[in-house]
Length: 108
Image (tube, rainbow, N blue to C red; front, top):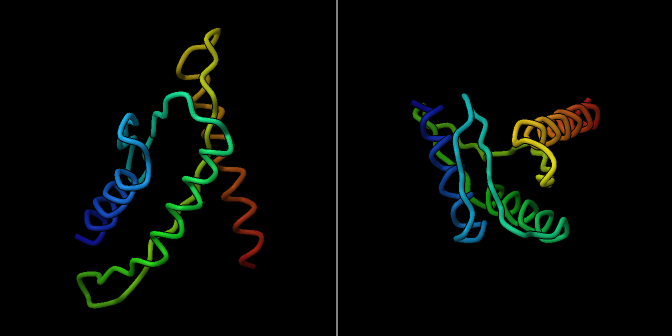
């Protein structure tokens, strides 16, 4: 299916873009969680930009023959030693939804 194709292409792009000491998990339908060790915010933003660039440069042919590119919204958060993992995940999730709202405004 197209959904499976898109998810597998995103997973492949994540693996190529981020360091080998990172871990990736499919977190739900089309959501992924990436665990990065000891990366600065600047490094993370550079990797996100590189991932977007790679996806835009890699058109996909869907099962009906249509051509598309992948895009995504993302958020990230530093996991503080004093908090549980769910708190960091919640912060990243909120940041992702903020980005989605901003992108939607620009598309109107």
